[in-house]
Image (cartoon, rainbow, N blue to C red; front, side):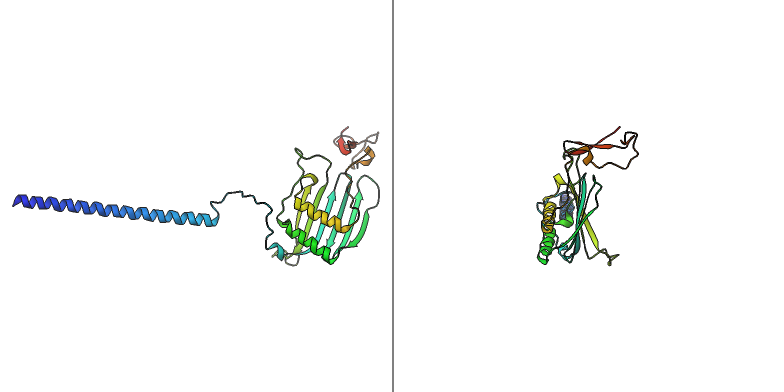
Length: 246
């Protein structure tokens, strides 16, 4: 009888131990499942928020933002600057154009002319600005390590409504500038359309022939009429005005 009781007790103990182990294993499995679910949710949230996207993802010919087409362009200004000249074309929303230019190396009065763009030309100019994604266009300044000297600097400014929410009565504006040899293709297309519609010469003097072609700074001069100290005197070398110090 004692042997039967002992055997039954051992069996009960073994069964209890097995049941406890089974319960523990099931609990552990539930924990693993819960962790897996949490990880899946975390990855999904991170992906949707952009946390797992690359920091830089270049695009080719990005499409204009739909918000750009909500902008009402009221003025476009093209400025061209070189060592020897400055010029600008200003076009308002009615197609009225004002041209201004001057030589930096000659004592001549400023050049001022006016003209008009047709409604069709204004429509094409506006389309060209949007098509080339002007409002997201980067600037391309002069790079002394790679760019040749003596090129032109182009500045393009577009004024538009709606303006700043804090100052809704005033237009917003976007300006992009670039050095002639590294401008965006889209920038040059807009510039070329403006110059083409103007239909007249736009002053852009880049090459000098003699030292007298080079504009001189308003510095104090010595007895020989040459600038002194840190004030340079510009001379013409290979068609470009370069500074020389005395």
